Length: 256
Length: 352
Image (tube, rainbow over all chains, first blue to last red; front, side, top):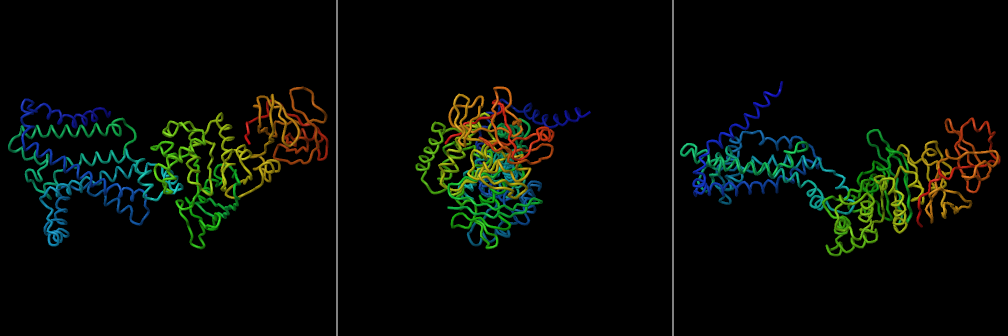
């Protein structure tokens, strides 16, 4: 009998969210949402998650193309490396970023000395931390879409005289656009919820690096009602993401 | 302009060894069963597959020659391809599909669009320029694919089963139209099919490929009349005639006359299998039949049946049983009457 554990699993996933809705102090929601801190945190979160998604698209789509199309030794190793951040605890990712890009980091010390750039504890650091954690989501989704695409369209374009770049731009990319869209949405959602790597690598400075998840965590200690309302806000954004993905996942079948 | 290819390739357990020459404005149809290596030949000519040995030369250009270390990628070959299921880019309109190669050749956007419009006009698709491939019928998609392949003025045109995706009703019409467009094309053409009728209608020369090798080559009528192997006999063993029909009576170009119920007036291509032909010692009874006298020119045994070639107006192939051969005492040089029902004679419109 599998129905009982299945129902328990569903309840396990749904009840916490229900509790969040039940305990929301609805009459104070407008006041709390309109405070300056919340506005700042939300704006910062959206700006950082959008920037991180942009970086992931620019770097991740070519990487997905290389993994799906190019033939070179060690390709499976590269694919394994890409998926490491997917399973790595985000805090560890944050520490690793600090060791690379921190003021005394492997690269960061040079950045500091030569260009006077210090990344940690800046808004840019938030974007870097989010991109590090979210990139694999995009790469995996887009690589799947590329593998599923019919390569003979690329052959057809080649016989019509199209260069590799033209084929990618005018044939391959349009054909896998739904997959790229789904990957970008996933990537954005992951970046928006990023906590561990962000607080480790970028810290928690109001208006500079304190994104929504950090705000929620801090508020829980000082002003639980505010934490609940902020959580509600993040839940709303997540639901919006889910709606954006519904064609791919909620209709069953297909999907990466 | 001349295509000269010596294609040698080993893939898994399949071995391709095909020599092929195609002259300017010549249409060579490569005929063979599935898995014979026909599509592989096209991939080699298009540059989508590299040869293990041999060469591909088009005019003065060497496209592939492993021994000299030469391989020209598909982009730089100037070879147009009509793929089996057309592979029209689904996210582009018909007009953008046709303009694709022109844009790659460096035409401006406006110029490419204008030329693409001209091609669609020529294909009788003038008003479908803004349609997406998904909204086109099979016949329309085939013509867009042909226009797309021809637009960048290739020197070699390759067609992979261009009629296989069409339903039977549309096939005859599209075939006749394709023949007209291929006649207008000045470069070399190689078309691949497993349908003998395609070969008979479209080919200047037929190349029969079996198991990665050429087993016979020649003009379609010759291959049909003198199949060199049992396989070719089964494949192209057709009685085939060109003629002009009027009220169901067809005056054949090569002399003689046949009745074909349902033949459309005008130029037609008549076909019927040798098994539809009966042989008689004297003029057969009944009026609904085509019957004409001739002399037996050859007898060949193919398993349980016997193929009898009759020299007559028109000449005809008949498949009869070994029992009938004994009963009628058939032997070369003997006078016989051949007969075939008017309903067994298949007529397809043939243009030009």
